[in-house]
Image (cartoon, rainbow, N blue to C red; front, side):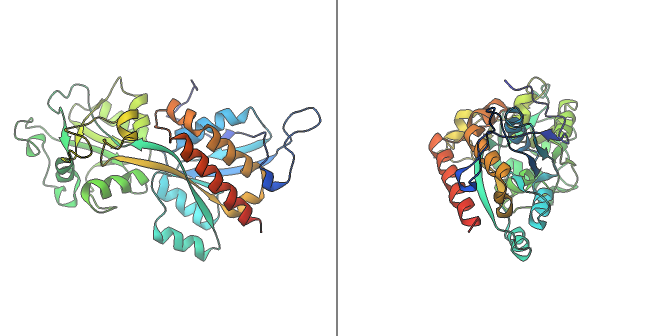
Length: 327
């Protein structure tokens, strides 16, 4: 297992690679058999995807230490702003690019490829001492998080009468987060639409800390952060009231996210690559290394790998994109 530190989201990584993608026409090995790659790669974006990218980078580092890869975290929205300006080579994203972001990219002459790297199950969590929430429905989550709930839904017993007459304290990702966008669309019905009177942070570890120290808290974030902190959190089974997905309330897990029964909070995770960056051998090599290792490493850090055939499809997609970008 990798010794990953999820609480160090602003760490920069020194990374590298060994294999050069054939489209670049380079050679990744010197006469002694070591890597001849050098250069730098700039990555930013989702805090949810960050642990996967960090894991790939940690393995990649030993291959070609002369390539410097910097991995930042500013949320999917923040990363997209940098990406569509051309400030970074790769953006980690926990949602797909928005039409408005695509328009900015086009206006700045940026073309890109979207690559799926893993699955995630957005996890609803409470404090371990919370002994009244055995499950929750999507309708109840909407009642808690919709804009109309602000200043109105303040106590647990307003959700279910049998729950305590105690204040409800909410923790969730900030508005620049792709996790926020996905949750609000899946639960509330409209992306970027929610109450504003909750403790928000782009750093999921802040949310973990908040829920884990507050018996009356409820929050949500990516599955990996629950896995890393499950000794001090309790995941809540979610019922979408649609037995065709899976009967009753279902917990997120490797199996339930993969088979789609954990609905509607299962989602794919992405990276986007700037076409201009594919002119550089170190970027080509890094992306191929990423796709070769994302399955194993995403599972190591608590996410759900894609089927092997989908990783092959992503590699083929990237190969065609990179070749086209060099014409």
